[in-house]
Image (cartoon, rainbow, N blue to C red):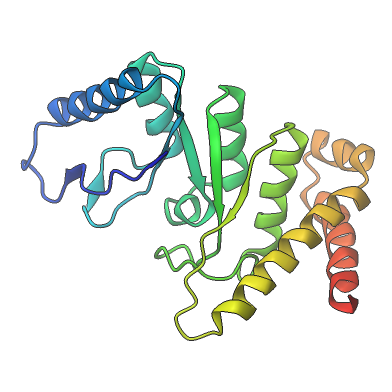
Length: 212
């Protein structure tokens, strides 16, 4: 079950007791998780909207809240666009959640980082999205890849097809990626070499997907 606590937060300085807000958010989800131990609950964090400041606004705050809950059936739903909007690196956020066995689900989309635009997958941050898929695959994460796109002016069926085609290309590119060469580049923090390696695999897979 996905939980999106968009109303939990505040809008102005001095409006709320921050400790009280935190305790209420933590205790409410803990109570829910304990009442339904056979269900898994995934918290979809977001920096803001509709509140100007949400209590569970980042992967770090959400993981900290889950730790305070002390239950095993609450985790994170990592929305790629929310992570971008919050100034995070989605691949890094995924690894943080996976390291604690708390990444329960993902939503994939894109935006310009200034708002939760829910654009087509890979339409803006192509390389970062590929890195996100690489991080999940490299960590052995085996979950559902969910589209969360809202094509207001584009044909919705074609937008879905485009997003799925791009995600399939990412998965294919993972097979073309030279892991040993990439590991060497990362060990040396050679950013340009690492990007060349990633682009070589990604562009090959994208070209093949267009030919199908």
